Image (cartoon, rainbow, N blue to C red; front, side, top):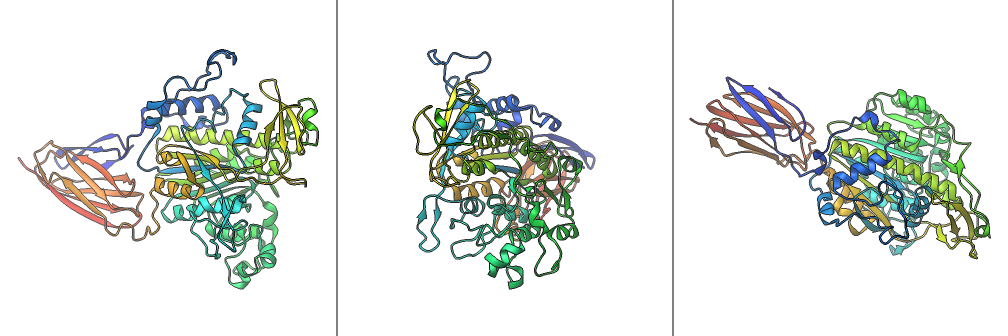
Length: 595
């Protein structure tokens, strides 16, 4: 008897000459399962309002402002809530474990950057359908450490902050997933792979840049993209000196199932040691079975990606071109008339958007054992550095569309957690229109048809600087309640690890697996509850019933545990055997059906 379906389905089958009802007992109360599932073919860009409505409905949150435009000057006309939110927030808190986690990062996306983009694209009373739709929100601290002293460095860089959520360990600026002493720290992506999940790493920057690099590599300097830079800058870590090699070489070794972004230029470099010495990194990737694509059409043509044939998409030689362009901020720009951003003519039509890359990655990673996917909107930060408001805003809008894709998938599946945050705060501020500022300013005309002046004043040079404020973090799905309040960026590592039920030693995590059948003796047609526990090294188990009747089923494991019921009708003794599909661990128990 084969049993299949969702965790809450009821299954019928024959056991010997008697009928058995198998019933899965849900391991958590999940409000997502109350809602109709929407075809994944509709998970495209035109989901803004749908995504917001779905998340609001699923969580129970009610947002004011639907329907006709409101007069913001009315009493209560600018409110965002619609009624009391107590029960809605309570319903949004979902325990248990997630099969999948999607982490979306807006590089440099502080509260100011979100507000700038929302005002421009949606209006002051507007709402992003992705970024603003997650029901549980908190703040986290982002400071890094000073390498020499271990004291806090209050204004961190992307390498140190990314390493913090990727590994759970604070480190120094410039370091990629190593501690203060330079020792490699296991990343979430590596741990997910170890636990049998599929993995993905997406960015709009070069795939060797700090944020994508923290999941796939360990190196003392974030600039060591390829063998050339590593030989000169990270000498002891170069392959020829017995090290792990450059970021790109480590990426090829870590082997995520899906890697998408820019950074093709580095792949022209040649390995300086090892099996592929003298061959380019492109040749190495091809030799090692990677499917390589360079445009939207090539990405669309890929139908599968796994460890036998991982996907490597390189859509630009460097960073991927941003969505919008506009006037540069200048001294005195606050006194100029407001303007609108325009489409970037340098962004080719053949380049996939971040939302399209996210959609494709989810389609390729979706599997019964689960996946971990990190998605980065990288150039919010890069355009903030450049005092480029339109570039920064367009990249935030791109990230919002990717969040919509992730949330829509989570709402469909009911077993996926989504987290949205940033790595560090940045420089842009909204200031009074027409005011004097020692910094560079630009005035834009927003969706409200009102002027908004944006100020960049953390540097007198060509590049603005990061700032040290705490950041918004928002979550949806199992484990998302752990982002509420004030946390640290290192907490995110443990929040995701625990949500996915990952174990540091999956090879032995099911060594003490057990199964119990209760009650041990019942009359025909009465339920027997089977609980398999301590299968910490497994994502799924095979269940076999033998004796007076027989049958089998494959079940997903949540937190090392799966619980279900059987209802045998034939008198006799039964043995329940549970086998971990990943660990091979076996546990048994017996029960009896008496007249």
